[in-house]
Length: 369
Image (cartoon, rainbow, N blue to C red; front, side):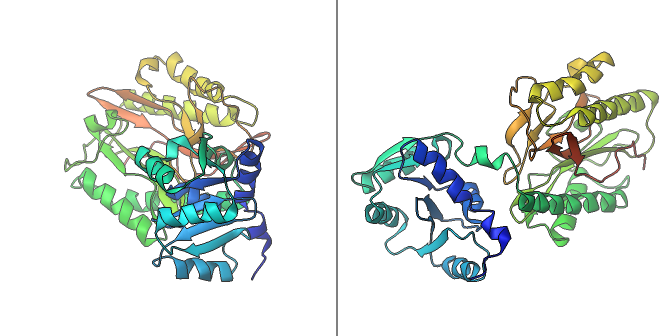
């Protein structure tokens, strides 16, 4: 089997085991897809991952076992990952694994297990005590490895290309839904493995809705058109928002747009390792408040992302979380005037010791089409 240095560095199961071991657990069980992908670098919709002292066991069924074994043979899985085929069924095989390994205390993440799943485990796994630790994987996922950053860069490069494409697609006859569909088709046809989230494409009065849903309404002339979308590449998400004008912006629109742009720029200059999420948020919020639009900025400055579109830490008015090098966070201030229009500009940045690196290449200046 290949022992590429890349794989040696991504034994995430070993990080998790050291943490649960200190808490007195013999192993940890994960039934959710994101934790399984993080621990194994393998995607399955029906399976389990068990992190023990000796290995990270990937339990899966006949639909996935051949692919998992091939990935193992070709060095695409972490060295500690061992694929297992279901013999009796998911819960019966989990129980057998605990019995054969002598596991007596098993760790679960309470946010990632349902009541029904827990009841089934307790009925099947005799002699096993289940305990809980919150955010077992999520806390490790906060700091991205070079390999994870590379995947997010690729996802964002697809997202940036989609923006360049859509500027030539937008015209007065298009509907919000048509633009959303074109963005999604372009990303899919240019290497995206999926969408990071449901695309937002809202025009005119609809743009005052931060998470508005695209409709059959035709794009509004001489008003804002906001597009918030992202690609997923090899499991990892990108996230970008751009607001353009179909036609011409009036003076108030220019003032609002430039206020949001300044708020974003100042926050991006300020973000670095060692500051809190609420400090980053305050920098942008102060710019918008000083311009007289503070009441129209209702959401937080940003969030982290990776395997999920919203991860920890966040950059919000209440976040005491301290940013560290390796965090990837969005910087997305906005102004939304109800019943009129709204503006949001969003970039992703990689936090470094002395600042942050912008991961988003698309033009941030006001574009009039």
